[in-house]
Amino acid sequence: MEKSVLSAATFKALETAAPGDRLALDALLDAMPWNEDGLVPAIAQQYDDGEVLMMAWMNRDTLLETLRERRVCYWSRSRAKPWRKGESSGQVQQLVEAYLDCDGDTLLLKVDQTGPACHTGRHSCFYTRLDGDGGEVISAPLIDPATLYGPR
Image 1: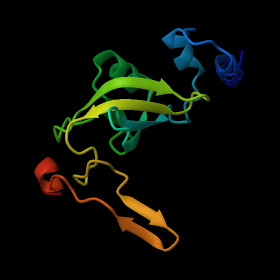
Image 2: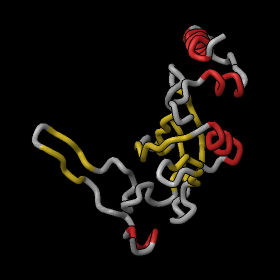
Image 3: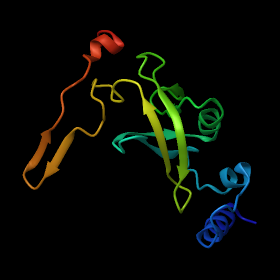
Image 4: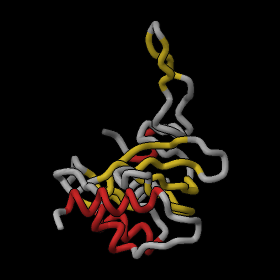
């Protein structure tokens, strides 16, 4: 069976699944519609207050590592390698729960974030509020990025 048909059939079947029904992890990962680079977007959300912290990319290996180790690991497109959140800054994300959306093409990671999630030193990457007139910065850095990463 063609992968796109498998993906559609798997996620269509989940639409009518009852609470408690389970699918094997490999079956879900095989059915996911990974993009042409083998990636899916992953949204990190603070588990206790619901604040959306950031969006990054994951491939199959980084997702499996995250689920196994409970420390979030993304795929760095710019470095073309796994990026273990906090490996250089110490601002680690511990996985609390992971979810897959109804189409299987986006992950939601509920995490316990240590310090800022954003490379700007802010708690969240979403610190510019948009309106009909432009954008407004709504939060200050918690830590100077030079302290986190050194001079750039």
